[in-house]
Image (cartoon, rainbow, N blue to C red; front, side, top):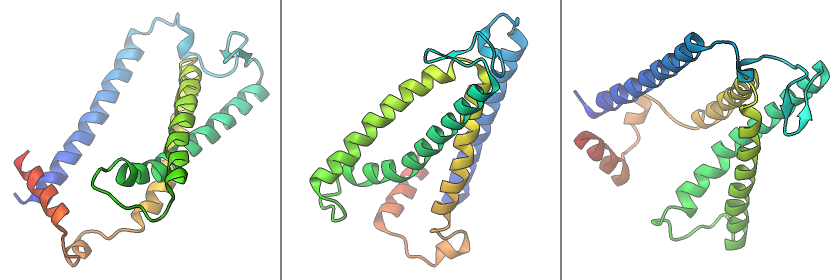
Length: 182
């Protein structure tokens, strides 16, 4: 079996295990649920408080959902645009020269992005644990945005037989050799 086949098998196996694990967790939650927890409620109701705000009407609930959708879409966009650049350039000790930005611009982008993400993460955790539908709607908005950002990134790449025409670099050969040993 060649390296590409091994890699494909390993990735798809991990993907299937991930799906199975999520299915098991959902099955356990559904089967053990006794209906006494507010976390499994759906929709607006008089007892739903999000960050101190009572979400007791349809209008407030729709505003909450739209705000969550916007926050999640922006978060996915940032995760797919800023963080790869930071990881590949700022945090990579092998990169010694960055030509696209000044040092202060990168400080602002890197530290500012992490601070904003941490604040949003804290707030969204508080919102997400309030009830199941809000968490799932947040995930849905994130996944819809991820479809678009992934498509943009994938449209800039080549696949399958096209890849064979591109000469491999030393780094890709090293990565494949490491994967082969694993």
